Length: 125
Image 1 (cartoon, rainbow, N blue to C red):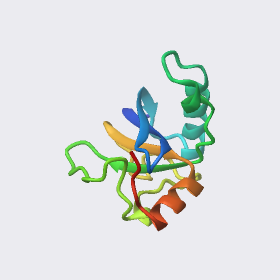
Image 2: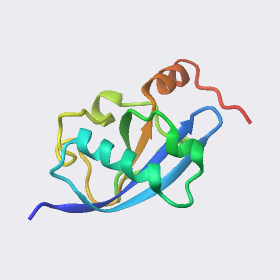
Image 3: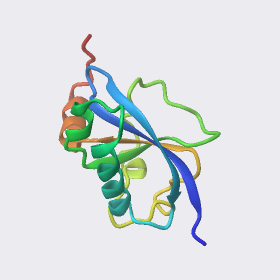
Image 4: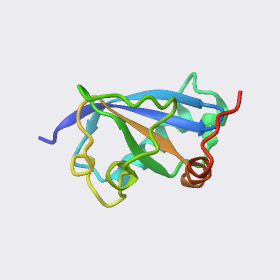
């Protein structure tokens, strides 16, 4: 039987406004590809109760590990801007190979938004 995990997905709508919503997924198969998990998350949030419409319809396309159980959290408010090569999940990897384990928290965001924010990491109120 495939390993399963609880994974928290932080839907990042805006980096500079710190606009995000955490969504918890139970019984996530770690042997599925990142691409399959992204599709599962997109399908789920499109119909999830209690999630504001802007979060449901946003063009998320990239996942990055924010935090793993029993690890240190970054002091960034939305997510760390470091170690992209290591922490951004590649579509063809399995979740387990990409480093996702039980109680991992990943950010789900639009790569273009992230690039713009990373180039000029200012927050707005």
